[in-house]
Image (cartoon, rainbow, N blue to C red):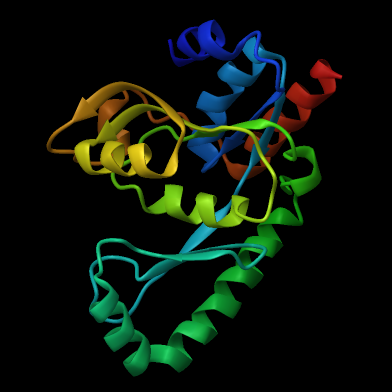
Length: 209
């Protein structure tokens, strides 16, 4: 359903499109869009940086080091927490980047040069907050892209508000007031393991070429 809406608007765009999934689940949604647009599909992996006794992640980081702070914290709260946990955060950044790059060693590297000049469609299987959109936006800052488009089957009101700020266009099938968690809105939990997800991406690219 998302693919139909997106193709109707961007199927004949002057700029080529590129689909960038924000998670393994996002790949399974994004592959449907990429098939219809006959475009590339990549996975932007990120990890949360958690602090002791804090319920929400302070920040998120990609394998390449692009980092964004969680908007659920005010600037003052971030300054205070960074003052208290600066060394801890720096250590966590290194640990998370190492783990991400270990996963990327199995495939799924995102290539910036393939995004240049493209309309980039960020895809998630569900967005409870706009946090991971901010991480992706930080990653894309260094790339000359066309439009930034966000697509998700489900999103919270908070996430949609963030979409309007970071994106040029958005597609969301259902906006949910009291968002529980993404798995709750699917009848079956059938996202494959990471290695299989990478195979899905590679097979799509192979068939597209």
